[in-house]
Amino acid sequence: MEIKDRIVNYWTKRSESFAKLRHEELHSYMSDLWLTEILKYLPTKPCKILDVGTGSGFFAQLLAKHHHEVDGIDLTHSMIEQAKLSLKQLSDYNSKINFQVMDAENLTYADNSFDVVISRNLTWTLPNPQKAYSEWYRVLKPNGILLNFDADYGNEQFYQQTPQQLPPNHAHLSVQPQLMQECDLIKNSLEISHKLRPQWDLHILKQLQFQKISIDNTLGERIYKFQDKFYNPAPVFLIYATK
Image (cartoon, rainbow, N blue to C red):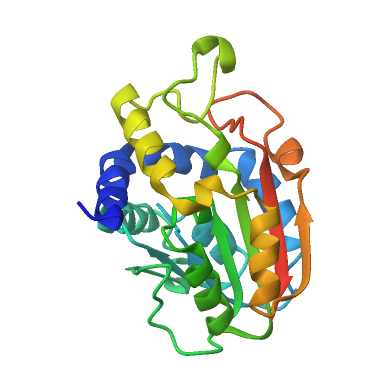
């Protein structure tokens, strides 16, 4: 099976439980924490935003609430179906969001289409993240903003973690062990899992002519304050850059 097929198959199996957790997160204290981190980088005027790897649409829905026009894309069809299902409950701003299946490494948008490209926990899953970064640069307008929230998940071993290594509550608590094993197998086969991050990302962004690049390695401390069902024990970082 091709690696992208394996990735889609994995996230298809997880889509329903993943969407449930993100729906709960959307209606929790976490929404304000994420918005605080995102909005400080965005202009006050409404923006056209591309949410890459939208999953069930968490970021897209947060940003639409703040009057931004958002395209949310994901390679996994069932994730987009979950995002659309969630959107039906939010009729007050659902006209500002468009969800569709699309490959983050091969965007169908025209050059200079978006004010902002944003992503959460996607880059570590990509077979060709350099190609993805190049595509994100292409579709950004001049002076457009990249916000990439991710972690060096290549250093994590999800399946082999024991209860003693994890807090009582965390985001993967309900995921079946065989799915965590499949996640590790996929992750370990990806080239990005063997890079030092976010230093590798910084190098690639410079090669692609991104400007004003900065990395915030303390983001996770502000987002994941509590060891609850949303908790992510991996050190999360933010990569900011402009075109």
